[in-house]
Image (spheres, rainbow, N blue to C red):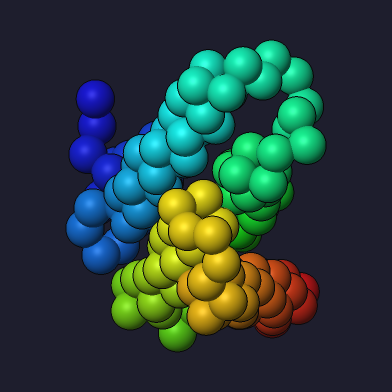
Length: 152
């Protein structure tokens, strides 16, 4: 397999200018957290005999929403961040910018998921987690728009 950096790389392999790809690393960490949230739903279902839906159980509702909310925001945000990473654009494709966007997403998802799935009520984690997630999504979207318009 050809290296992911440097010259002579085929068009199918992104030319990541600053070393190892960043987005897949964070994506893998987020995938592990998603599995944790998934297992929380499965185990709770089995322990409480809830085959489908939420069984009108608040603990089940919270676990389902933590899991569902993750799946609603993470894929789109990662899809928006990866093109920034491989763009090579000044500032927007800089590794510091990419790490910042991905840390916002990771911390947001950890905070939100933990507060919703592992506690009865933690407004700071839930609201703060959503704020960080939405900030990451918004910045990634705006940065992509700027790059597209800039290259026109």
